[in-house]
Image 1 (cartoon, helix red, strand yellow):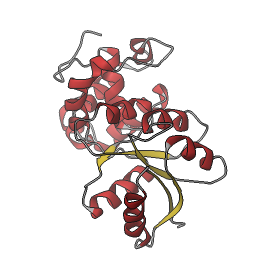
Image 2: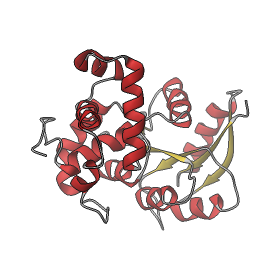
Image 3: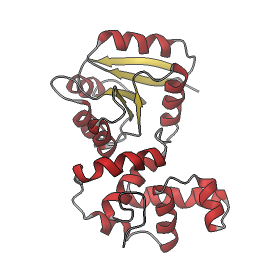
Image 4: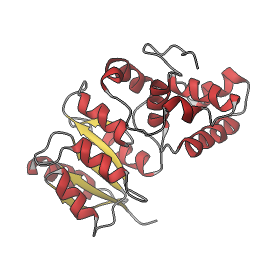
Length: 227
């Protein structure tokens, strides 16, 4: 299996050097590109194939949130993992809405960062839905939807069972916990989650949580809404 192609985007060269050293020691990863700001990242991606982008938030010229939005809007984009200095950084949560598959703190232990890169590459999100929900409780009123279609209309595409599953995903339950709650097999729940992602054009469970808030399916505090 070819190594995971990683791009480092940060305006601090020392941080990029540190991340590169950690990743270079992994047989399944390769740093194929670097950039000092969001615009440079977008320019480099035009000519370089990348699987996962480690994206800083606060950078000159073009910040990480807008860069993430532009990258994720492209056809077959790389996965984006937001790196932030602050646990309660509203820009990082805007990054989730922009299409990032999760976020990590810059001082995360190296093993956790490597696990996160592998998870994102495999299609998973690296922010636990319950953690995302807690953060969205604080920031969702400040993050208007960029969708052209009202978000509650998007949820109407789902079957009743799929909406049940979506609600439980948004409340932070794992597939196993959802299976126990709905008396289904875990494989069936995984199938439902996959259909939800496909029907709604979402990339991972983080975006399911975001959409559940925007649609009113879940209110601040994690309680069901009135859809």
